Length: 495
Ligand code: AHR
Image: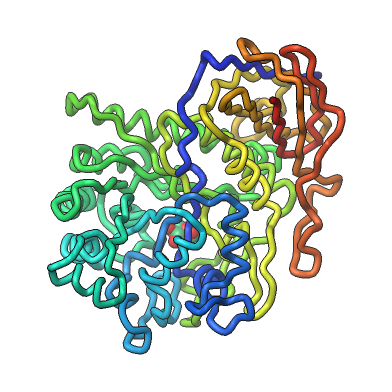
């Protein structure tokens, strides 16, 4: 059986928002320490930033980076991480029971971001802190000078304001695990008041309210509604988080994880729009899907088992070829909702559930999931087209019958890029019907696939899984044909 994709540039979802290719750097495990930052490493620059990781992050095409957490932010005092390194206090991080030296902080992060050429998505602590610390941080970061906090930034060597645009009002405030967690009423009020103060300091910022931590938590749906009833007018985004587990349940459901992401995006938009209706508001929020990835979280024993280490090996997930296909399908889903999803951050960047792995003092390498991200960030340009898919289906325990093909397509100046995942375990012949497009004449096909779908990249075999060019795709007038390998992520480009 064959799959069919019909594309017509007249039917558009929206522009390709560059912020969909975001990532996340949390002070967790070895994401910061011995991940992006390792003074003394042979690849480290004068600031201790690992050049090998900077190069890989640039190659991945990361456009925005959320920081400094995550659960970490809910007990974090941002002032600890600025100013002379020798004067910074060592603290207990309660989220992950780590020793935090504060050798890396806002200034180091912003210096690193300049190197990778991405924008910050900055989270404030609404767990153990509140309005005051958040407004002080906006003043430190964004106010030009002549006031207490802006002058402190200047004293720390940064004359120009950082101009941080996007701010997250806390992190996963619905989670019982969150230090200083809140009820929806408590958080909604706090988010409103914090947003008000932050905007007084800098009216140009964009604010993200915390949505639910996942779709399994009992308050899912009602949390968003209550929170937004309090702070709708003050925010621009509502966040969504989710991780897709490879070890629980049937494999077909895992391969179809994007169905769950799709449903969640629709749920969160519907809830936000419902609040808009109640408030008679014409304003529409966007979703910031600011934590997503494949993560076998059911294998994680929880933070209570962790033991006050600095930069411990924490959730260093190894990804295989199937994981790359799932990550590709999640990116496709985000693009297919480009009209309402404005920010997305894969969690996390280095070592912790990450596309980039490093060894302390040793090499850095690309995990399998690096490749679909890099290929999509590099090739998704211009506008997203509505992808009409007809495909054979496969049975899944969680979602019933699911099409084996998921796809999206973008177009910019007659440059067409199709992103397609074959979730099935057989080769999938695909026919693309290009309506209303100038007849392209050249076609290329790149795939991330392997006969062994459990194949991984390791320190000693870092290039085991890489994108490969496939021959055999054809183009004839407005009809493209190709065969997608079993469990594969694919990019077809036509000009
Ligand atoms: O990314 C790992 C953790 O997952 C984050 O700290 C938290 O926000 C989420 O629960």
